[in-house]
Length: 195
Image (cartoon, rainbow, N blue to C red):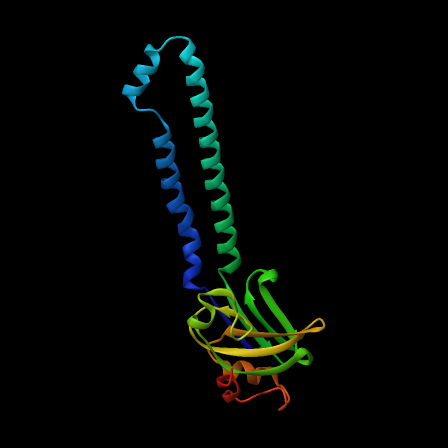
């Protein structure tokens, strides 16, 4: 059996985002407030200008609600993404393989019988344009990328469709060996250089 579990360094960026958004939101709210000199001018206006003031106050109130709602939603979303991506794991045994992130939605599980081909591969930042769950349009495969470097390429049946994946793995050979696959399922890494 092969198991590996890591916390991706980039998942902490999801926690930093609300820390940045809150001061930006406060700055926007302060900009919406009137300076004291302008407040004195408003007090000197005639009664018919009070209606204009009320309208401006309503607009400022709406802006406040929009900014606070945006900050709250972004904080919740980024916190949820952090929790969902904070643990990356790979588990392989003679029963099958599971790779991906903590959340069941963001991980894949295949039995040995579903695996068509597997071989050691490289997880390239250039191919996927970032970290996380990505799609390589040129290679037409899904990437579960935690770091650039060693990984495993797997082609498997998901339902009635054949899917291609590559996922980060510290020891691809040990992961593949733990699957105890038939020789037809294990392909040499030279196959990847043709893609």
